[in-house]
Image (cartoon, rainbow, N blue to C red; front, top):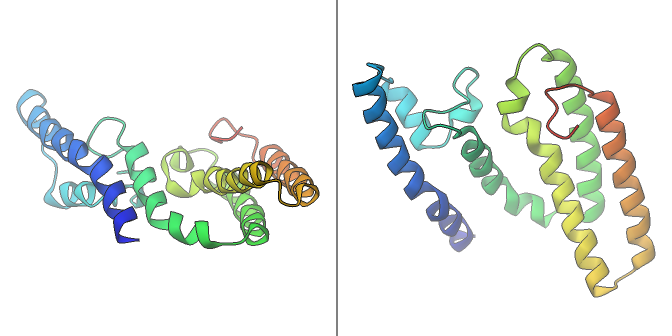
Length: 169
């Protein structure tokens, strides 16, 4: 777990920190814009994605890095779940996501918020197990039903949350 966490952190953080410093200097000297210490610390700790209004981050396009770093924190837990648990989680998350799309349909909050991408991460995990099972040829019949169920959940989610803000539509 420590090796996994450190490798992910050092794969992303050093360049991000360089760009953060460059952006802060650029903003100060070219645009006469200063960022609060709190905002800088939130960006340095990759917490900005949890803060409505600050989800874009200071560094250009850093909202994607914010989502990625949060996913890396949850990945070990998600990876340990069984296939049935992942399928159940994907259905629950998709239904909750659809409800959130209805509530926040007039804003871009889900487009920039980690939770808006959880269905994609869960389905990615299911696809990984599916492809690994096909490669190992373990119980291919079971995986056919799982693929069908996953497809129905994805289709249901896309229909229920039909919106231009939906990243999976």
